[in-house]
Length: 333
View 1 (spheres, rainbow, N blue to C red):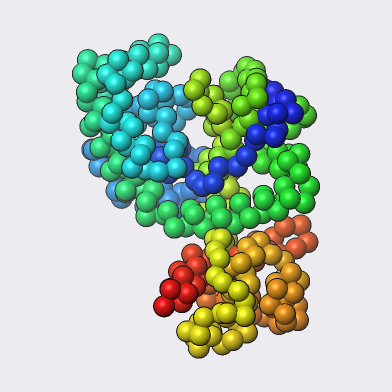
View 2 (spheres, one colour):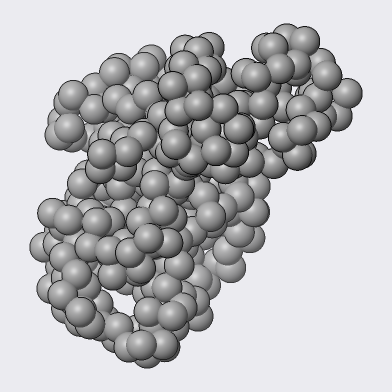
């Protein structure tokens, strides 16, 4: 798949602000039907298997291990509730049309698809299955997923700030997304071959934890084309940064100073106000020596209040969700 950019497309290309929960569910359903990436996802598969329920079975009919899903089921918005409402309110004629187009490419017609084709209003039951599956196999991991996303986002924003969008595109997913300006060459799991001309719309880059290898993409007629890219390290990662503002360093909350000590509280605030900062930058922000900054950051990281990721020869510090919650409660007290 070749995605063709103009200068206007590059100017309008951006990263999505967060992970898309029902896109993660779709990819997760695919992973449950195959055995690739055992080191990364087998533990998750085993836990997910414990929550398998007949209510989820229709999803396996419409979301194969490889290949497209019906267009109306391609849910990739940032909000679960909005996506579910969109699915439940899909007009019957659209359900029928999307199903007919999808079934024309299938070797066999699943029973669930035949029932839905006969009675399109059953899409509400399919939405219930999506909601249940999300609650069982995605939602329990959402805090971890958002941790991983925040770490990856801090790193990629730094790449773009330091080296421009060219570096960002080159390092999104080097094995399956190859940037040869002005064309992004994409290798998909299905081996799809074709050309997509963005025509000034730009490209939305969507992060994903479960889509660890092959990218997914879509180019809706009434929206911006998008392509997924993998969050680094997946479930094996120990990274968990989250952006946060916590007030001026000199105003580190008294309750936080009492809990952590003044210097460590200042270090946590500095990390929160400068997610993705290096140790030397952290030392400058906190007005302490690099050795002291490294020591305090290590204590905060071991306590689950901050995280660390590597960028070349540098290490980057960011707050964890626990650190965010602590700072939020301290500033609101």
